[in-house]
Length: 61
Ligand SMILES: [Zn+2]
Image (tube, rainbow, N blue to C red; front, side, top):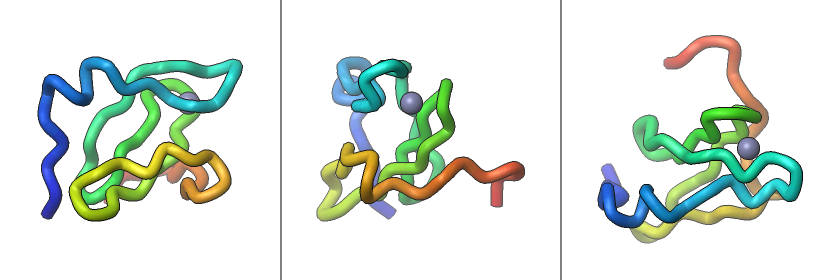
């Protein structure tokens, strides 16, 4: 499983223009703490593109 370093997570925010909240790693996804979009991690690098993100899930797997 890819791991995003805490230092990188500190500076990453949700790219949605009216969100900009912090992200948390959940498995192989980065999940926005506000809007809940789930961004994939490719080659250990987060893909922060809203169009490629999965919608929020009601429950964590
Ligand atoms: Zn967001």
